[in-house]
Length: 126
Image 1 (cartoon, rainbow, N blue to C red):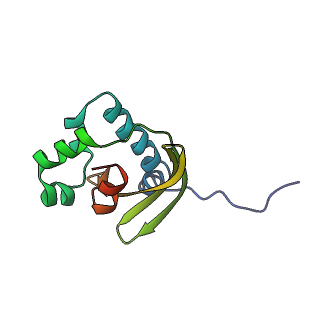
Image 2 (cartoon, one colour):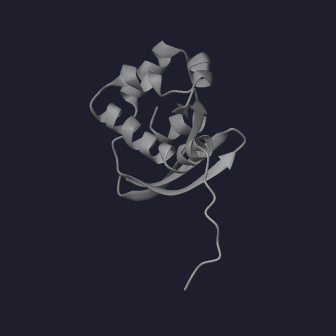
């Protein structure tokens, strides 16, 4: 049976936008968590949103990264767009209790970056 659908080429810039939204944020979280697990806290700053660095400062963020608890398993359940942000909703198990962890990320200079806010600080244990 022959399909009547036509092949329509997709420009590379459109593919990149789809890739950024649908694939990079979850990969970003895995990478961010891996950096945390091996103690590369300064590298985490490279993946922290500019607005968060301005709000808290690099010294304060490094202290927060040293103190946070972020080594538990994460399972992506959903993603939503809110304005210029992507909200990643992860199911996690912390202290034998299933919980939801919501991470707000933004694309800056073609890189996914974590937005640090009070909710994130509360969830990861300041």
